[in-house]
Length: 397
Image (cartoon, rainbow, N blue to C red; front, side, top):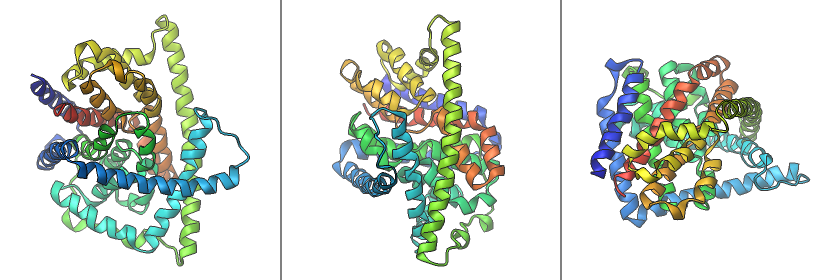
């Protein structure tokens, strides 16, 4: 019965994406089926073999080491500040400012031709099996490791060739991802096996849902990645400087937009609670999510609490929701733990609209305005992707 409900949940999620589609006639059904099969195979592999977990863990450890290097630079400049755990400064100092370091790495990797090779081969491979254009395919793979802002920086030279649908897909991949550099933090809060399996599943889910909502067909002769214009640096140190300046500019824009988005949401929550006698927006979202939550496999007795956690993640961020869910781990079933954990392991929340729009604004002001315009649709699509990943996991629990 659980498997049948899970299959029904998949059908409902894809059905909603189909209804949201702006070009139903050009949906790439072959690619969607292939990616669904890859998700099932990946989940089986991650849950039944140690090799899959070892691979993802080692990759995460590598990027966490890069975070240590970046933190050394931040601490040198801002070492006089005392940062308390749980404070707002942690996000600014430990995440936003590190965009500068990651932008520098990406610029250097581009200059020494490592990044163009990744675009050419990994992007080509995913594009070949799914039928998606190469830029979208590379961005999806890269988003597993670098996260939303850094992944978009990596394809900044490609923005000139992205129409609205293609821009939606790359933005959805960024929002549906999590940065490998912060996976270690997630592993300290929730079960590792569910965090690890969410990484590849969310890549496919974001592509599946986004390619249904915003289908793309790029002529073969135009389906190329312009690696010649990725970097204009004439030396190694110029590449470092260019990357640092790009990262600093984008970090500042992202911080500015985050302040506006999160403050506005706090205002909405205050008004909502005042109008409905303390009934919060998160609780309301719990009731909204409950029906699909039951189809996803969450037991009926746990679905309202689980839905509230998922709603918390949507209106705040995954860290707040994970900390709340951590206290529930012993009181809910393993199936609920797995489904909710996978759902939480993405950047699909309101504040990410600001992060992505701000990042794109820093790259291309015109396209930044377009991302802001379809921001809510982007959030709905990314949330459907998180639900799809969580449902796939529920089938194996």
